[in-house]
Amino acid sequence: MGLSEYLALDGIVPNLHARCKREALAILARRAAEITGVDAETIEEALMTREHLGSTGVGHGVAIPHGKIGDLTEITALFAQLDAPLEFDAIDDAPVDIVFMLLAPEEATAAHLKALAKASRLLRDESVRNSLRGADTKEAIYAILTETATSNAA
Image (tube, rainbow, N blue to C red):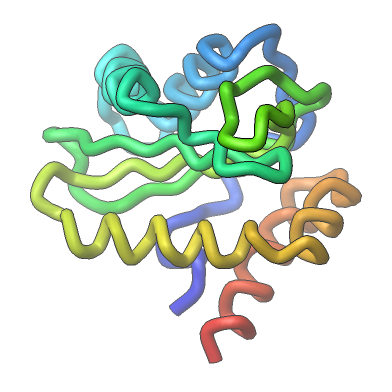
């Protein structure tokens, strides 16, 4: 299965406006709270705790923030295309404009790692990143993330 098992159309935020990494993560935490029913502060705290261990900016303008949430029942992904690149302390020092957030239940260690690997593998592909940057609707972004991930898995 591709990323569609974790990502729903309402988890996509095109042209997200944020002034800094923390604000971007807070906005995504609020959206995740709407989708999952888990408190936004709990989600934001998990994401920031992970960021303090080391930036989730993986390079090429991509960040994959992630965290484990005790009250979560299933792995949930959100995607944001930022309206302007942000400093994210990425490993290549490049600003980030693509954010793929992944939340997992506390006990879902293997599934969490598998989902992270899928997202990372997909977003390492330059053509996928370019397509995402050129997409301007939720539907177009969703198609790129789910159809490309499914075809790459085959």
